Amino acid sequence: MTRPVIVVGAGVAGLSAAVAMARAGQPVVVVTKAEPPGINTFHAQGGIAAALWPDTAAEHAADTLRVARGLGHPAAVAVLTESAPAAVAELMAGGVLTDESNGVDRAQEAGHSRPRVLHAKDGFTGRAVWHYLARVAKADERIRWITDQVVALCGSDSAITGVYLASRETIAGRGVVLASGGYAGLYPWSTNPDTATGDGLWLAYQVGAQLADLEFVQFHPTVLKEAGRPPLLLTEALRGAGAWLVDEDEQRILADHPWGELAPRDEVAKAVWRTARAYLTAAHLGPGIRKAFPALAEALAERGWDLARDRLPVRPAAHFAMGGIVTDLWGATGVPGLWAVGEVAASGVHGANRLASNSLLEGRVFGLRVAEAVLGAEGPSSDKCGLAFAPPDPAFWIPTSVARQTLDQALGVIRTQTTLEDAQNYPWHAMGHLSDWLTGLMLEAAVKRQESRGAHCRDDYPATDDRWRGHLVHQKGHPLKLVPIGK
Image 1 (tube, rainbow, N blue to C red):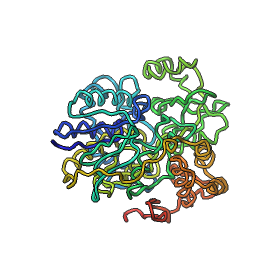
Image 2: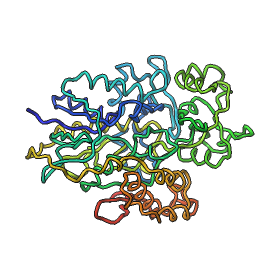
Image 3: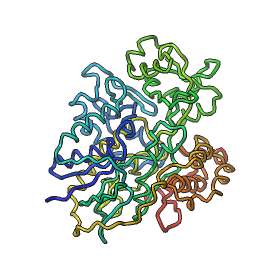
Image 4: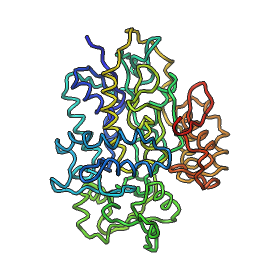
């Protein structure tokens, strides 16, 4: 019997890989520690960027690299943008995504030079994509679906071959694909579910994989600001449709920016952060805006807001982690038998700042590529699946209040030397919690990077410095190092 591939995570990246492998006849076990709404893909209101005619992959790549602030890898970006049309074809054929051929125009979002973003009909694209892929996966008898948490990797002397679960079950196979998402859910004010805690980074780090760019966390600039209520993301497509960001005097915050409200996300987040009271308004667009964004209009109405009438108070919130497990263009981590894909990976496409609507695309494109790579890889020579490291205590996975507070105060939209260095005095690596371990690594990188670039903004080093044009890389047993671009 063919041994299964274990996919850890059930978002767009994990399910794209799992479905592709199963269609090729490969048994797959999908392990997810949460079902919706605990899966980040489910929350993505943005769309999927794809250069469909007359747009070109080269234009999409140019926008992606410009927004990446010098840290994007041209080869990875070329893979992303050139693969985009084929990667979205099934989703379009299945009615998940729409374009002008079936009555809905492609949208323009922040950082894009032209409209190229495809959305679901109700605007909640991630949810629609997830339902489609999950339905396909659960209907395939070659895919086994387990809701549990992976607490350790296991393997033979030469390769990772499986996972060990919180329920104390070992799942052995021919390799592991980590698609477990990012770590922005550790922040107290975040668009992510609280399950996005960086588990996959820790699992990979324990077996020698490299982590890069942990200081780069993107903040979504327009999240509804309400005391005592969960954050509600106000999609960037609203600004693409003409909504404005204004201050308390109804003056446009980005009036002097050549791109206005469609400036790259890092610039918009900083502008909103520096405004004492910032609002998003679509009142000048008329009541038709409700029909253009029906699901969001309904969600706002449930909270007592009218999308077509009210100034909506907004603030930035942690949204996407550019940092992750270093991979090649096929998701390989450098650890035999272990691949990574999606937000958990640092694939080279986002650099210091992600282009809007490239994240669902990354999960889809590289999920399909990882499937191809795993199918073409030689399986392990041994059936052995011994623990690669000891599973931690259950409390290890629970985020601590000190980590959340530090992320909010020291690793927010704008960072300061004093706050960063004060935070470093805490014994992060001795506290026995995932959130503390990861916060410590993020602080180390943020203190080391003495410049402002993309999502990393320091008021004591406001300029971008080419001496820091590279990736800060963590690896177990090694000091933090800067790897220049191209090395």
